Amino acid sequence: MASAADEPEQTPSADPSITPSAPRQQVPDVSAGQSRRTGGRRRSDNPHVQRRPKHRRTSTEPRRRELLQALGIFQKATPDQLWKLTRPDNQHDKLTRDNLLDLEEHHLVRIESVQDDQRQVWVLTKRGDSEAKTLLEPKDIPVSVLREEKYDPVTGKMLGTGYDDHAAAVTSTAAEFHCAGIGHRLGFQTEIGHRLGNGYVQRADLVVRAPDSNVPVMLLEIDRRSEDAHDLVHKLHRYWQ
View 1 (cartoon, rainbow, N blue to C red):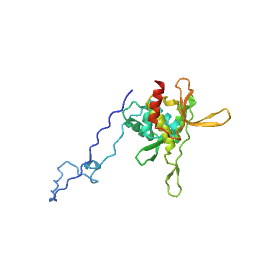
View 2: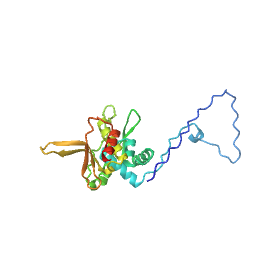
View 3: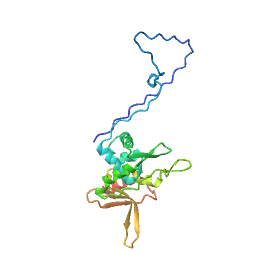
View 4: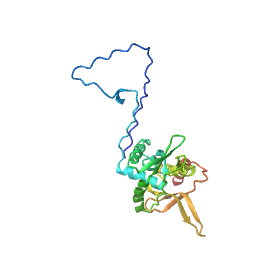
């Protein structure tokens, strides 16, 4: 399984040094046969102008499918969560972020919000939601509700962009499970109702299904947050041993 290449080191931009003013040198005349430049200086003439780096085209069909499936199941997620839900063997989430940018250019995903710690929250677009359904329907996996773009008519600010702590905890728990080898990528489901003997329907925040039989083997309630996902992973490993 391919791993992402390390990110190239960023060279800090150099500020122009402050030097005493000197008399301007006279520009030599243009030699015969050489056309005079028109239109002023070009952007490329100034080495201090920062250019927007272009991300590498690294999106392949398997990675594209994995990200759409993950966002179809969990509705919204950060690059760190998507990295652990799809390619936990990679060293970091750089490749995942590059793939998200490629999907964004194809209008399949979009950034819904940026958190205070600069984490980007990604969701499916309407076009991406339609494609995710085709990738999940054969396995009877329910697709989460589409996050539609709604704006305040007065301020023009996008509505409903809050990142609910409970939803984030559910996604992070599944990501830690998958990263530790517990469950499989398409075996997670959220908010699944289970009818009890008395007719009462109990909804589980996160359901982990067996990879072969597709039978629920673990139902988790995330509301209480009584222990961290890392602690739960270690506890499960101890039980199995």
